[in-house]
Image (cartoon, rainbow, N blue to C red; front, side, top):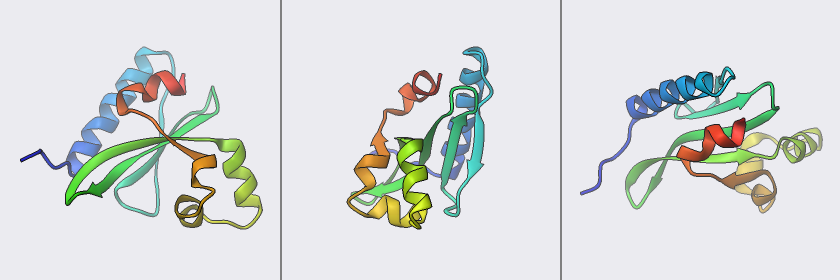
Length: 109
């Protein structure tokens, strides 16, 4: 059986990503979301952001990550959409794009 992830795994990954960011010359901003197992991470210098969190697939909790198109996110936010609506509607693909966890720091640079 595959290893299921939990909040401890997610916390350890966030710590590792913060270290990797420092090694790449920037401080990783980490903001919790309304969902306890979802975090928004960003590089304020490059103005790039991503979402990192736990989700359930086939009864297994796994860690997933998505880049955030901040321009599109801001547009839809201004139009009155909240984050939950944006992540569950057809516009989701315009705002969020799957990114491998081990590619996040490279993306945020």
